[in-house]
Image (cartoon, rainbow, N blue to C red; front, side):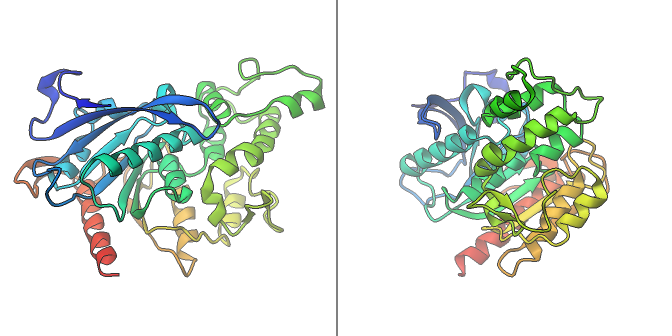
Amino acid sequence: KVRDWAGIYDAQNLDSTIRYDYISLPVKASDGSTYTETAMLGLPSDYSDNGEPVRLLVDCHGFSGGSFKFQTTYTWLQYYVHQGYAVVVIDGGGTIGAYNMGCPKAIDGHVAVYEYIAKNYNIKQDGVFVKGGSMGGITSLNLVCSGRIPVIAHIDECPVTDLFRQAYCRGWDPGNIKRIANYYGFSFDKYNADHGTNYNLNTFPWTNKSQTISDAERELYINNFVENVVPNNPIWKYMSCFDYETKTVKEGYEDFLTATDEDRIAELWSTVTVDYPAPLAIYHGTGDAAVAYEYSKYLSDAINRSENSVCDLNTYNTTSHGNFGTKQNYTCKDGAVMNVYSGYDEMYQYMLEQEEIFENK
């Protein structure tokens, strides 16, 4: 179903020049379950069902985000609507949406909403732009690499690219680590059989934020990473250090999944190639304390070592987690004046460049 978003939240927070449609639809997930996916779609003022089709931008929100923030918090997305894009924020996974960790249900939901919009709205059918941010980085990477939607180019803002090192090496709290285990279907059977324990999701001794990963967590995680996370993080299909068919790391990279020493991680990444399936631009602050800049650089360098892929890494000398550059007023395509950080206009310019390249192919 689709309904006008206005009235669900305080109407005074809404940009009255944008048409907001709330989307709610049943999704048959890849694990066989059925759930309700929700999203909000913003349409530019000149949108019509029968006029010139518009380009769709799919936004993969960060941790604790979601469609409900489109009309209040996500002013940069409103900016893109005023520049002529249809923009959709998809919760991803139903009730787990705000904290979905890029899991399979989240990808299923993004694909289902895209297919619904492509069928029921006047958007260009030949491709979309995808944007991720923070935890939405891993969601957007998985979505693009899934090959289930046509992608012109991909933008990632301070993205999570590695769940293991983000969750364990950088000291997330147990609740978030449990979410990864839950949403990716971790099994405790092998660990329990090997150690004579009877752990489950709620009784396993997850490490707290002030501690490093325990030996028990590392063993449990690595076993499950290969069995459950890798098959559902399809970027691994494009990584030269991994055999995606057999789900094994190649010779010389045996500790790629387990290394926690930063020097060793850098050494391992230094020879990896990633044949990324779409043009990618990453925007990241070098002093980001929430999501490590180094992992964006590892990924960018690996993509640029490929003869078939390209990644633009845009760095900012800041500790800010997003909101790069300075706030400025921009006059948009529809005449609206929006006050947004200059980094978001840089992303807009990147989309314009990629659109031109795409149209001229």
